[in-house]
Structures are given as C-alpha cells and as structure tokens.
Length: 335
Image 1 (tube, rainbow, N blue to C red):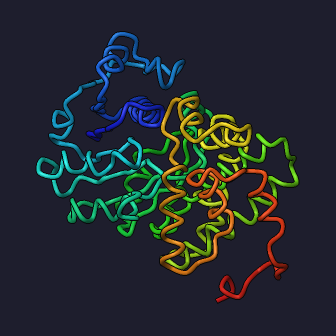
Image 2: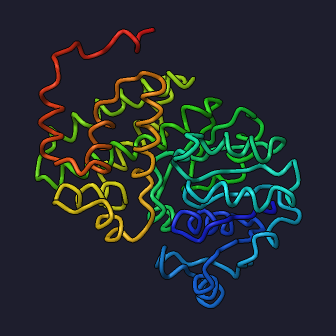
C-alpha cells in the first residue's frame, strides 16, 4: 500500500521502518532537515531512534503535501499538541477515503478533545483509527515482539490497519471502543508520572503497585463517564500500556516523574528528558474533564498540584494515604 507517515520522532520512525520492512511504499514527512539528511544518508534516525536502520532507501521530505498523492493510509506520528496543525495542513489535499491512523497518546489541552474528535472536526469523511498499546519505539525499532490494538468506529478501517501493519513481531488486535482505547493511552501517562515520582522519592514496589491498581480504576471511572467500555481498560491500551509505562526507563513520563520526585521542577524535568512528555499536558486536560464530569480522581488531582501548583510530592503522597477510608470497588464501577 501507499502509506504516509508524519513525524520524525522515535515512534513515527519506528512505524515508518516497520511498514517499509513489510514492503509498503512509505513516504515519510519530517520537519527537521537534519533528520531528513540522516535518513537519506544513513537510513537511520540517529537523534531519536539510533540503531534502528531501514533495510532500504525511503522517500523522506520536509514538505508534507508531497506524501499525500495516492496515499491509502496517513499515519500521524507527532505529539498530541501538534496533531491539529498536521490535520489542518492536509485537510484540503488528502483523499476522503484515506485512513487516518493516530499514534499519539494524549488529550488536546485547550479543547479537551481526543485526536479522533479533532480528526472528525477537520476531516469528517476520513476513516480514523487509533493505534495504541504497550509499545516503546525503542523496542519496536529493534523488532522485539510487541502487541497493540487498532481501534475505530469503522471496524473495516481497523481491520485494514490490522492486516497492513501486522508483522511476525508486531501483532495487532482490533477494538470498536475508540473512546476507551484513546483515553487509556492518554490517561496511563498520568499514572506513569506518579510511578516515576514514587521512584524519585525512593519508595518501593508496594507503593507503585498501589498507584497502578488505583490508577487503572481511576482511568476507568473517567472513561465510563465519557462513554468508554470499562472492559477496554483491562486490555492492551489500558492495563497493558500502564504496566509498560510505569515500569520501563524507556518511558518519558516515568523518567520525568523520577526527576520530579528528586526535587526538579516541571520545566527542569522536561528539559532533562529531551522529548515531549505527553502526560504533563494530559494531567491538565484530565483534571478539567474530571471536574466537568464530577468524577473523583485523587491521583490525577495530586499530580496536577505537583506540576502546576508546585506542591511537595511527599506531601501529595501523605494526602493520598490519609484520605477517608472506603470500600475498594465503588458502586459506579458495577453500574
């Protein structure tokens, strides 16, 4: 197939490489000229995905419109904050039958919209698929076995992505719960920040296990309020992605959280990580959504205070531990 990939970060590069190795005709849009140069000369993104070499030359350009002619699938591999800009650039040039596949995991901060909602707003006729799950680019780029989920309200589009993206080391399931899959991928980054703070404070496995368990429940509650199927959060885009993001040093959100727990500011942590930390903006969006839907999200609230109110992380832990005693599973979950 003719597949366009936009975004020269680690994840966009890993997917472009995967699709190229499968034999698709890939056109790769990258904003940075130095990255384009490296890919053309070395078949490698030396800055964001070193060591993952393409097996053949690939069409790379700094002009996104050059990637659109005859594209069957258009992959968005940029941070959430840049997705609207990308969709705006292509909306008048892309064929209405081209499938949009989104890789980013976040919520637009100002509008509180998921990427599928932005796509529906700007490209209402194009099928949309979210590709999510436990999938560090660093491992996909090394052909380490990985399993993800393709979610869409258009199940035929999801099955097309499943068929065309699956390789012997990259397995894809489908899911019609687009809301749940998108929210799982976004909200788990908040809990990963908390898990990192746990590590930065030199707490242990007990604390992290509690954060992850109560975190998946917190994610499910907001998801249900927004129309998601709670069972989705028990799958790859929920607990699967949560596990890998809370435990791996590949996780930018966990690494940023470690720095916050060690006393760094939000800006210092982001600068040290060196790439976009999606969870930081997602915290603000989820905080607003929880207020709007009157959903109690204590972990999210505390991470918001640490990030945006300069609240002491250790005091945040004390506040969480000192909350009123309750039953483990609340009635909203059963309902």
